[in-house]
Each structure stands twice: as C-alpha cells, then as structure tokens.
Length: 222
Image (cartoon, rainbow, N blue to C red):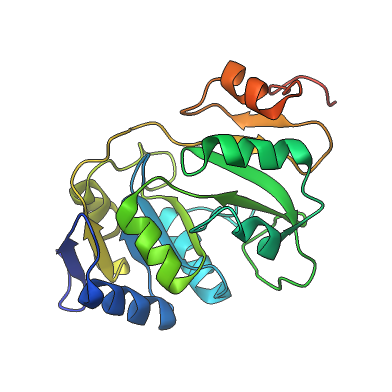
C-alpha cells in the first residue's frame, strides 16, 4: 500500500505539474522512482548526501556500491569530472543518450557524497524522454535500479512499488520499460578502459567506438 504522501503518476511525458511535484520531492530529500531506457530506477538529488543514503538503505545496499549519476546532456561530463580520456568522450558521443555508464574521475571540488567512490563518479545520459525532461529541470540525479539488492530490476512501476512502497514519494509510471537489461559499465578512470558490467552494448561495439582495446573483467589488472 502507498501512503497518502506517495504519488503514482502515469506519464510518458512531464507537464508543469509533474515537474513541480518532482522538483518539490527532490528538494525535500525524498526519493523518486523513474522510468529509464533500461529498467526503472530509484533516485534522488545527487547533491543531497542524506537522500543518497536513503536510496542505498531502501535497496539494502552499502556505501561500497555508490549509485551512478544520470544527466541531461553530454556537456555535464565537464561539470562533474576531470581528466576525461578522449576514448571516454568518444564512447559518450557514440552511445549517449543510451545504456552506457562511464566511470570517470570526479572533480575534487564537487563535494558530493555518493558513497565509497574512490574519487570517481559513474555518469550516464539515459535515452528516455520524460526522464531527460526531469533531469534538465532539476539537475543530476543519483539513480540506481529500482529493486532490492539481489532481486531482479523492476521493469514496471508495480514491481518497484512492491519493493519500496511508501519509502518512495513519487512514482513516475511510463508503462513497462522497453529494455530489461541494465546499462553497460565501462571504467574510464584508471588508464585503459575496462568493462565492469556487460549490458545493453556489446564489447565489439564499445571497442569500435572507443578506438582502443577495452579490457574485460579479469584482464589487464591484477
């Protein structure tokens, strides 16, 4: 059951009222469930450390697994990151918006507490119109898959509600997600690029776009 303070909003695009409700919830440090181009995500204002901690707690996840940050444009890379390799920019140009998360060096002056990041930040620009509208309005959000740790990712809002109930203030329901596979994750912060998780994009396509060989788990580093 959802409480009277929890809103389920059916939408494929966001009107002014939708944006106002989402903006208000985020400003108060509350959690949202949002549709993405892969699976549904649970998220919050990326700059609010208490809200980020609430996202991790809702999932049953510790600080050693920080959430990635979703952004509205490729230009956000330079506002969040430093020392961005050319191959990382090439990957972003090729696959954003889309199912690719890049691990990059975070700006030292960013001041966000996303967890135990080791000075890095995961960044993705999703290919989902309503979510991009929201991100353009409110700024970067810390968003991770809307499921309890160890459970399958939610591909419908009903699945997310069954996991989180009234721990989430606003559920944006855009129907079943088109994909059911999470994003590919490539570490671009430690020299040669390395796949941390295979997802919607093949290794061959990643390597071709990067213009350099991409390591897979178990390769290259002891």
